[in-house]
Each structure stands twice: as structure tokens, then as C-alpha cells.
Amino acid sequence: MYPPRFAYEAPRSLDQAQALLAEYGDEAKVLAGGQSLVPLLKLRFAAPAMLVDINNVPDLEYHRTASDGSLRVGALCRHADLERSTLLAQFPVMASAAPLVADPVVRHRGTLVGSVCHADPQGDWSAVLLALDASIVAVGPEGRRTIPMAEFVLGPFTPALRPGEIAIEAVIPPPQHQPAGSYFKLERRVGDFATAGAAVAVEMDGSRVTRAGIALTGVGTLGTRATAAEEALTGHELTDGSIAEAADAAAESANPQSDHRGSAQFKRHVVRTFVSRALHRVLDAPAGKAA
Image (tube, rainbow, N blue to C red; front, side):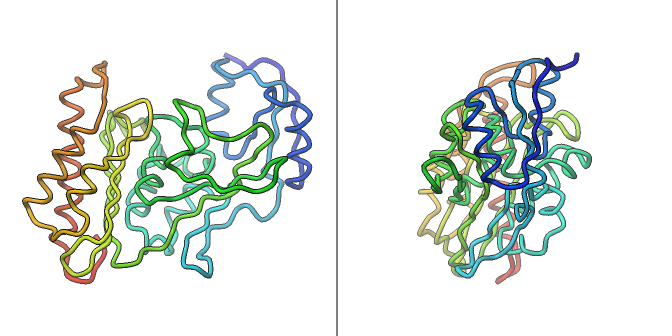
């Protein structure tokens, strides 16, 4: 199927892009990697009057460490750039997730920020950034604002961007202690969306967990923060017992639906298994090394 006709502009500055969004309002869509938007156009699930391609806007392809130690990921940074990046050593859950996003073709065009803005309940990066307490920076008619990931996704395919706003950057805060964690997802085949997934990001001071972030994907209409599981870990020694308690709490926080991919009970079991597996990987890692 071919998309309906639309106008196309490729502005060379954010000001030009914002002017187009102001002119067309809800009838405009922003194109970065296009790996989510283009399929929607071809299926006619989206029919914008104007496509604003920001790939000619300079200085948005970066990912870098800021002076405060945070990781900044620009709107045009591709998944493949992150997959190859040495900067993710301080963010093990991101390093774990990067090679699992879709397939190599998608990873060479798609972007982290675009993926998060797509707000797919089965998306990988939204859960990862939620577990890391990340935020999204947007610019619009009212200026620049920072939106915590916990507030960024309002519902399925509904980001918290206001009319005329463009998401330009993801900000991941620096770890305060030894970072560790993993991202696991169950997929029917390579490149598929997650049947169920879990992002686990912890910080360790010796054997004690000083911070825990656990977020789930594919098991609810939104990315799910497993707060009870986090509370079972934070401030405590990481042991087989605390891991089991956290894994059970994470499974309980999931709200999956039974469908052709599996029953709700099965998906909760997957969540429990993934959280346990990620935390045991931390427990079994050599002292002082990220896992």
C-alpha cells in the first residue's frame, strides 16, 4: 500500500522546522530515522499533510558525555551509533539493549529519540530510559523544556510533546556508584517487537544496592516501572532472597494481556525470569565490574 499524498520539507535549522510545525499544526509529522513513521504512512495509519524531515538540521547526530557526567543523545543519533559506542560502558543496560533493537537495517537508520517519541508500548528504549530516570529535552514555541521519562509517555503512541515541539535530546543521568544491569526481551524472531521485556539498571556500593531501576515493556499499555521491585532492592544487600523478592514483585506489577503471543500468566513468568536473570548476572559478576 502507498501512503496518501503529503507535502515534504527538509529544513536546515530548528527554527525552520518549528516554523513549519507552527504553520501546519497537527497536520505535520517530524521525520528523523523514519523507521516507525514510514510504515505507519504506508499502512495509512498516519496521513499527515506535511512531513518535516529534520535530517538536514545540524548538530543533532551526537551522543556525548556532558560536564556533569550525564549522557546526551541527540535526535539524529542512530541506534547503530549507540551499539558501537564506548560511552555506554557507564550505562550497561543501554549497552545491553542497543544490539537488540529491531534488526541491523533499522538500527542503521532509526534513532533513539525517535523511537521514544513513537511511544510504542512494545518499544525497547522507552523501558530502558525509564529504568535510568532519563528525560527528554524538547524545543517549541514556548522555548526549551525537559520532560522526565516517567511523564513523557501519556498512552500508546502518545508522547507528551506539545503542539509545535520537537524532541531534540535524551539525557541520561550519571551513575553515583558502580553501574550494572541488563535488558532482556522475548521476541518471536530477530527484529520483532517484545512479547515481554525487562530493563534492569542498578548501582552497587560493594554488595549493597544503592539505586534500582526496573522497567517493563510489552506487558501493559505503557512502559511499566516496577517500583515495588525496586524498593525490595534499594538499600539492601543483593542476595538470592532479595532477587527472588524483586522478581516476584516485578511480575506482579506487570499488566499483560493474553494474545497470540502468549497468555498473561506466561508473560508474567517471562518478566520474573528476566528480572531474576539480570540481577543474578550482577550478583555473580566479579567485584568492581559492571554486569
